[in-house]
Image (cartoon, rainbow, N blue to C red):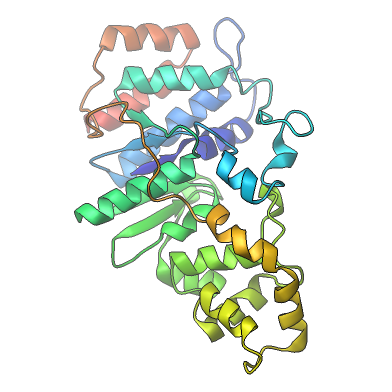
Length: 305
């Protein structure tokens, strides 16, 4: 099981209602929500191994070089490269890191890459080694691109909450988006774009039109070949839109697709879930310090089962 950590703790921050604070009055709603999410996932889905994948660079240079608008609107100042994190969330992130360490859970990232790339790289490693199934837990649709039935890779999508998670496989992608697999979803994402990530997409090509074009021509490469061939039956309007977006289409796939070869840091030698935390005394002190006894207990109980 690979956790898209930032996706999950941001969702916890906004999803845990009410005033959740430590005994000293510091906000801990994201920490509590993230730990409760892990406890629920471990209890219900029973992974043997788990990695909390981390953003070491939320706006990698190679993506910005290709498309300067990539996540630019999320910066703390115009042209800046620091992600805008709510004031009450920022100090909770180191607490989450400490909690994972004390629980003995593997956390890893890759310098210059996003958590999406860490996930993509670990998925590629598992598939190459023939180890499956692999589940990716996220609230981000971008990760649908790793879905691969033959390789045993699915996404546990928590867009509606972890207790209402949807298991995304190729049948789900066909029904929802009209694409055959994860790579087809990545091609669709290139065409559609994503304003939340600063990706413009192809003007006038939305999800339905994009899926239809990909179905007709096989994939993005086939569609681009059709654009270059005047004998293909693209409508004049569609051909014009795609021609006008040629510069974007030349670089967007490398931005949208997750890296399969990021230099993932091995922060722990073993990502096997522990039966019990490595230092019970330190974990108890941590839970009392932050007022997280119930959430920590739920994770420990889930591991013990």
